[in-house]
Image (cartoon, rainbow, N blue to C red; front, side, top):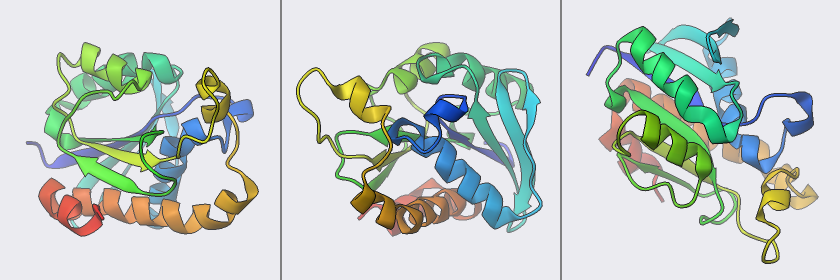
Length: 189
């Protein structure tokens, strides 16, 4: 494991996708950047990337610009460019299998049908990379999943979103400073 950790939030580029359920990974990474202060993103390869320090550790932030279903290309590029092990990553992703606002941090696992995680697993030759799943719920009719994940959160959810994103931000920063196991123990409720 290197001394650098990377928090990678998945989402889709472009203003039409901003603040949608599928872009919660971008929202969490933006919240981390705001907490770190004086952090600015610049385009490096297939991702918008920023770097900073947190409690003595080097932390990278990334928002792949390849669209969700092609996230693996960007993540593999980050791993290669920065000489990272898969265990140095924390991939932040939306999850319809978790209730709204619940987070779950895991050291590895399957994609759960999430195309972004599936693509990362393909590019990294396995699903053995840490991830933070942010629950977006599954309040959609059969066949309407794409429409649901690409829609904004409803008004009641939006009222809770800032607090819940801050909770996920703190979990991601605990991964950076204290390690995966401590982050899991503290934030998996």
